[in-house]
Length: 141
Image (cartoon, rainbow, N blue to C red; front, side, top):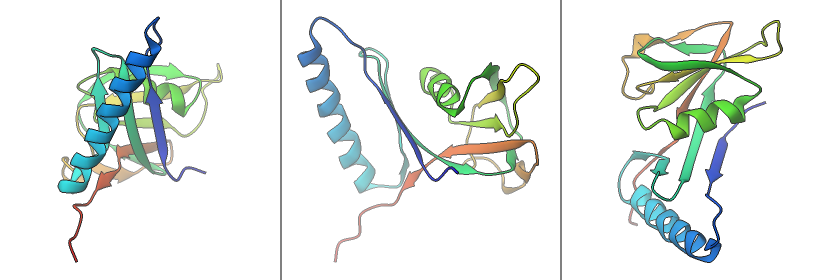
């Protein structure tokens, strides 16, 4: 069902050509940086309204850590968007089932499974946990 979730947002403006050039430049810099050292694939440039995030699900798992905020959302996309807009969000727990109103619970978290202790990520039948993908450093041959 979920393998990888990548979301990219960009603000529209009268100067769309400028925004896109800036976005492309930032995107290329972030990709170059990702190749040079291990890092999470989350990028935020709030001044220009550009967000990029790649999240990998741990199905039926819940990360028990500090919750920044929670909300009820229509789908995973809404939860990713909420996380990307929140500068302190590094991962999120997403309800596995809809509530009585047809919405999913979205918990924004202040850390991810790579920074939390191993015991914080636990099997759970009611949640899926999403942490950012991690790029490995490029290996010279």
